[in-house]
Length: 341
Image (cartoon, rainbow, N blue to C red; front, side, top):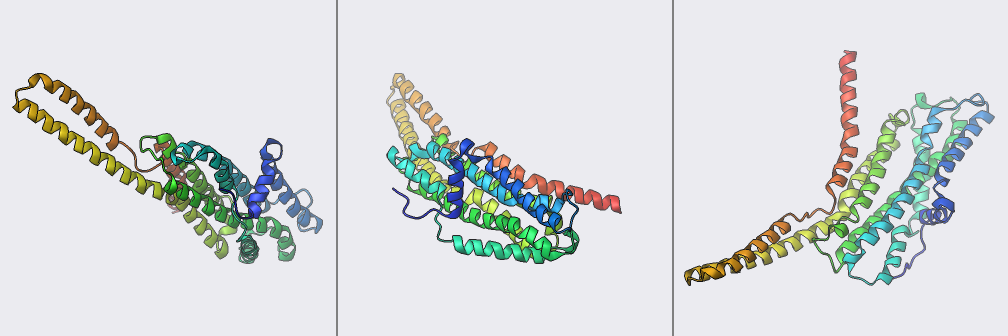
């Protein structure tokens, strides 16, 4: 199996960074610094803001592109580890694994021009609909020059990353469905991709929470930003659950087959026990009793097989990251309301 398409812009950028010293992890904070430098250079050079004065809005608003690129790079490397853990369950030769790894990190480029155009348009609309009170200067033209490159890169990176994640998680579903050596007792393989899906989902959930809190002033009343925020939050939840649905259904069927087989054997051992007792062969019942105990233990193991392919701590961690900030936000709002009254 070989990749038959040209990888997209995001995949090529991350691949280039990965080949740099230290796998290029320093690129992403450097990009953040460069974006901040550009926007402040514009407002300083035009006299909109005193030289040396840092604008909080520009600090928090330039976070998106570097974070999304860095998080996607980390998830790409996680996909390789997950693939290695799951590979024994595929039943395929080892020389095919590298082609699959390349597919996981190399999403196709077919949608790139459209996504880049949409990202730029959304950035412009988001700027035009931003509350005036959230802007550090009244000259919107100068501020637009300072804003458009960092914000445009953030929205473009978000859209490219969403499509990349969708492609990557579709591969998770595909490999789960096509694998030929799935063993319900092999939890290492079955849990292999749960961390990957959780990391992908949490990336988008964290972006949504960051926008609601740290960058909340810019989002307030910003229709484009709120719509994008809601979509990102929904995508984050879907990323965790949907790619694992196929292997869940498969595990349910495999578990049912195993239980049916073990119940047949329990029934046969029961019949053999009755036959020996009725024939007065009491000395021979111990063999049947021991066999029945072994089969009963096996049935318990089968009953305990999980059909959702994620470790309990992965699920609890994802739910905590999803629910806890909402709970804290609601509690603080309620307390603020009570104190204000």
